[in-house]
Image 1: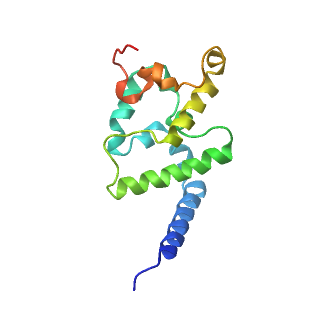
Image 2: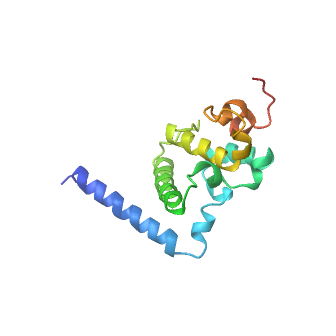
Amino acid sequence: MAKSPKGYLLLAILVGGALTAFVLFGPPRMLARSSEPGFCSGCHVMEAEFQAWAHVGAHRQIKCVDCHLPNQNQFVHYLWKSIDGLKDAYMFYSGQVSDDIELTPHAEKVLQANCIRCHSTTVSMIDDQRDCWKCHRGIQHKRSGTIQTL
């Protein structure tokens, strides 16, 4: 007997809730460890991005979540951490993840907001409507360490 789409959705919500509860209340420091760059690089498809971050640029003192997750408040941060983490785990373990990592439109908005959050003084003197990585190409993981011209 086949399950209905609602059954799969309910199962996904229950599994997601159980995983979230495990991470929040399970092994000590699990939540903190899942914010570390070493955790993010655990998937083989992130190895090149991790190496670029670890060896090049001024941003290597900050964590992946500082740029790639919303940081306006803790609730939104942990909500998106859960959503993105479950999506990434599903894509990775189902074999659907691409070797070519691209930012989604939502991820671009988050990244831009975080650039402005950290560099607000500098950004206030320039056009904040342009994506920061259009000029600062060296911060893109794949292009780190290469010399580029505008």
